[in-house]
Image 1 (cartoon, rainbow, N blue to C red):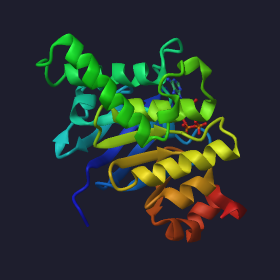
Image 2: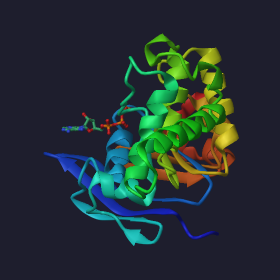
Image 3: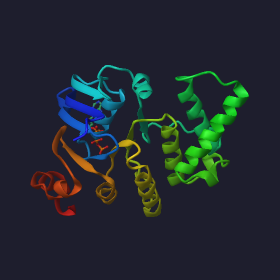
Length: 249
Ligand SMILES: Nc1ncnc2c1ncn2[C@@H]1O[C@H](COP(=O)(O)OP(=O)(O)OP(=O)(O)O)[C@@H](O)[C@H]1O
């Protein structure tokens, strides 16, 4: 097996007496879509927060690209290539789709180089933004204000903004939440196109999407990973059926 890009060991976080992540071990391999599923309140969002650096764990370790990032702040993790999308949104509704992505492109560049003059920088940020909008299927909406696009298109826009950070790992928190069947199908198709080019940790309640997209699935129940494996292995796992998937599987 390839060396994991993200490696979590014994990660624990309690709020008072409630152990929300109770010693989580999890590894995401380069280029894989790794889904994290589990019932409401299992600790998925908290775990993603710990990985992104928004929630400090009480114990355990997080390694990313071989470096220990357990105590690094959010922006330092972002610089290393960890990008989170969907739960924290920073879309400016009055700006066009292209302007929103160009802002993300410029924010990412500020970290790396300041060589271009302002006008040239703006032009090349727009070019990069248009390329990213093409990548997520939003090219036709480039000059539409973000306030005028559909919910599903906004999700794609947020994804383009996350991709502007040139991530090595995308943390996707419920990309299908609040979307209708057609928009969900479009998001699944988009993630299928991205598959293999980025490692993705996908938290999602839409089991059809999860079982279609994931290379591997980890099942979190009451703060613990009770199973991890291929979709077929997880679907057949007796403990998973009992604790979560039940007849859905
Ligand atoms: N800041 C906090 N303070 C106290 N309790 C918290 C805090 N954050 C989360 N919790 C509790 O931790 C538990 C796990 O929450 P979390 O949101 O991580 O679960 P989840 O698996 O993402 O759930 P869902 O699928 O419903 O989004 C819940 O019981 C929640 O109330």
